[in-house]
Image 1 (cartoon, helix red, strand yellow):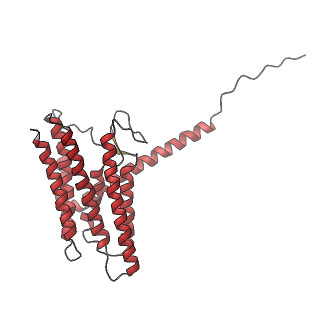
Image 2: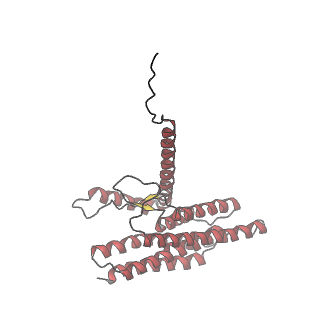
Image 3: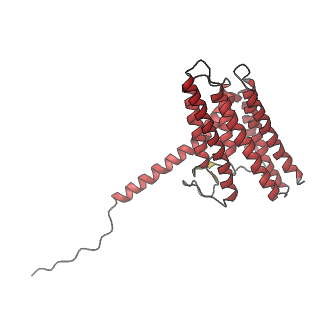
Length: 275
């Protein structure tokens, strides 16, 4: 039974390795390789979610499994999407554009994709050493949240955009937008903002009918409308963390302003006597 969770982790690594090889083979004439790489990373996300759950269900958790899972995440959700983001977003820029601009975009794109990888590895390291972390903008009491965007979700953002648009980026202003998006995703990973964890979903209940129906609907949508659905889900999840942080900051400023306007407690005025 101890090898069962590790098999799912091995599947996670295999998907990441396949995604890297497909990213290196992709080109303007053969863009389907980029799509294959994106789908491989997307399929690795359920493997990553299942290995830990299976280990806990079968009572086969071990330090070896935890370390292997972290290394697998660095490969599949760090190295693979960073190479995919660079190859799809910058390396395929047309030779007809200004050579100086093209070279600078490729160099800066490679650097930003490297930062994405560093942020993902740092996010995993922080997660491994944290015990009951609390986000900078706490949510509802009794609910658990991720502190910072989890690395599978960050890789899912890269995957959703590549799979959704298909064709590699072909002009400079799209490359700049892609540059900013990849940088923003990296920042969200190392931030201390809260993101929904989904840990309140409990499939071990006696009648989890609602969750089963919801999962069936999501799977049907993914099969027939994967390009649009993945984009919508990815951007909704990313902006949920940004909106939650903005709302919390606005609430704090409003409370501080209210406290500043409230009259400070004063002592009773002295009584005067008449002659």
